[in-house]
Amino acid sequence: MDAMLEDERIRRQPWPPPISEEHAALRERIAEAYEALLSPEDPNSADLRRRVFENPKLSAQAARILEMMFEERELLEKHDMDWRLYQR
Image (cartoon, rainbow, N blue to C red; front, side, top):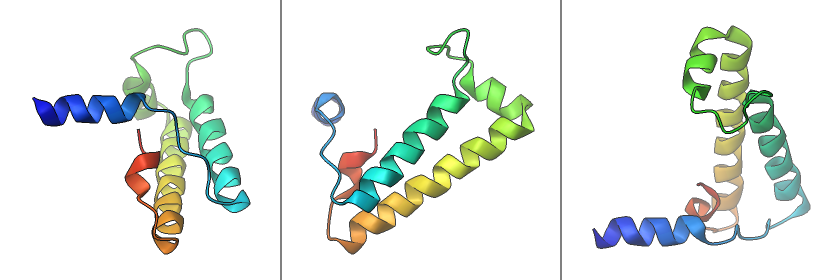
């Protein structure tokens, strides 16, 4: 239970600042790509998983987001940063 509470506390903290201009640009591309996945009618919709599985273009977009998240992880690790702080 304590671990779950700690995870939730960390999740609610503000995002740490980007470590470089390159990192800031990557974060922006990830955010823009994620916004493109959201339903324009209901951006808080819980049916994102279903929509991604049913639409090949959205599936490709989701895969690209994952690739960029791994790029971010590698960039942070290269600079001896804890990448988990940027994953929520």
